Length: 347
Image 1 (tube, helix red, strand yellow):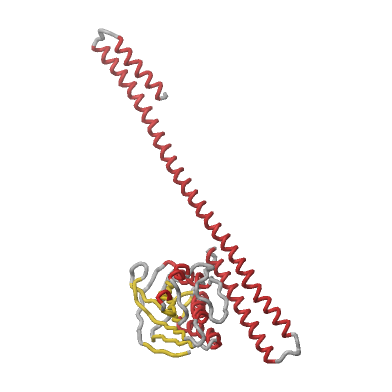
Image 2 (cartoon, rainbow, N blue to C red; image 1 turned 30 degrees about the horizontal axis):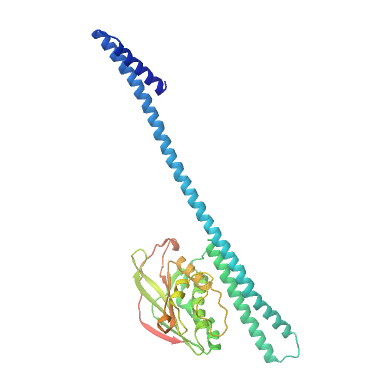
């Protein structure tokens, strides 16, 4: 029976009682029972409608929430697609600009090397230029590939035990020749502490090489670059005391303005400082370095006061020392102890 039918019967019975006069007590009791019965039927129908209404409202709220989440996700995906499309355009523009000229130079130098009349000294210089130009192109391509892999979430770190002291020493050796060509000196200071940690050796090498090569690139001729490696104990993002390996690279270049600092770790950013020997700058390396450091639950910072007329910059990378871990990127840290005796050497 529908609610409107039960309501109609209830109303008819009540109207019928009101029209009748001189009802006996038994008849009143009988009419009362009928009214109660009709009221019960009406109440049951109303409760059914209420339950259906509540269920419908619950379903509507759930559907509305799902629709909102779907719209938010669609907007998020659209923003990602727009950003990646813009980044793809920038990558193609950089590749077209920064790879075209070096390739043309390499082709020209190779053609020159085919000339048997040129002197051995000129050949040696041409080969050196080809090698350095090829290395710059390779660095750019590696940075662009790393950028794409990081943005698309396709970077798969290979975690192993890393001796950070050995890694930094190799990075310094690799950059020493470039520094010597500019008359620069690289000094290296480190403590006697253990610098063993877990991480991706190749990615961490890329971070350190980027920072040191930038110091060489932007420091003046005959400049001094100071590299230091130490252990520091501080609280991590979860408020737990943790030992970190701290790499600091100090140069005496032009430094960073406040505007430079705001866009320092962004992709394809051009800063106020210029390389001191015509080296190329693509605005990609530091952005990639920051992503890699964050993958290792570390931090990368830059300290400089160029606006105050103070030259030089100090780039610092801090990576937590982790000796036992289930998943390095789940931030499950274990405390370790280290000594802090100082020693130094010059490369």
